[in-house]
Length: 302
Length: 168
Image (tube, rainbow over all chains, first blue to last red; front, top):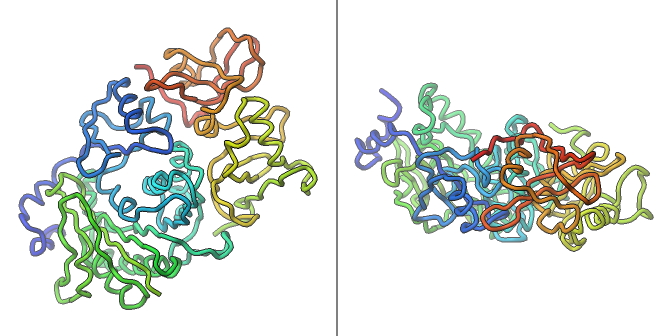
């Protein structure tokens, strides 16, 4: 059985879902408000002859129907950055405020990190962690081009994140956009399913549990943690939330999202999850013509 | 997973607080941007300055205890410990809008050549040395990066990895 078939029981209009997974995904960009306004960025795109279309749920996102971002003036100046629509969801949901301390637990290559810094008007502190030096180099390049002066980069495994370099201070908010089986990226990454195996899904779910656990521990009581993946696998989504809800002082909270989505599922194969995982959101490719995504918002209670 | 090469040390405020003779002070860094480019010191009032490696200065919005053992702290900002201090392209793009002296404004064609990495013979009656290079973009004057002006020539200092062919 091909992996995608396992989602037939949970996805409405499964044939439309399958067909959407087979279609390529157009390029999209986010306007970087550290360096320019939407009006300035779109005027610069006009001057460069680059076509763009607005996205209805997010003022700073535009789809580029003809071009890929990169070889134009607004990109060179860091006024725009390539970012898929669904990839903009978790930082938007985390909603960090200027002056706060925020941890981005799996940060490279920095698309969401720089979005966090921009949401904070580049005021405050975004600690961006990744365990891969090559990807950290991309993270640093991106945050420099986008002019983010509030990003500090640490090289470590998010499961063992140390607060020591910053004097032991915990965080107001944490973004946990974990490494995953990436099933939801199939539209831009045609081989996303080539190496798929259930044992890989289960193995990476263990890593995800470890990172989300550390995130809850490193965030202040009353603080917010957002957990996200770009996969459909319940083992990596609701299953990880269920595990951490049982072990750590946190609870899932409701949030608004202006994209069509479905609730988190509370049953999968022979497992039942904590009923509150329904507050998480599943984003499917055929509903908004995007990639696939999963996003949950938690409040730390302890 | 970290080692000493990832250590950032905060710049001392003034020469009186300096322990490493070669290390720049915050005061000197502010004076440099103000004297050379007319960037008011208050532009950086919410930022801290850090050195990692000899003469590589970084600018950061946060205020952690020094030293900090991390891979990156804000953005690279300035090269000191050489005869002429040199701002980075990133610093000029981010803070160069406040510059009022030693700013060279290029036409579209000249700007594209500059970003491609070409040196150009251009008239300039100001100081020789490092300049903030600007062009017009979307109705505003936008800093592109750092140029070196000597002997009637503007030499592009755009790092190889940042060069682009932006002819339209």
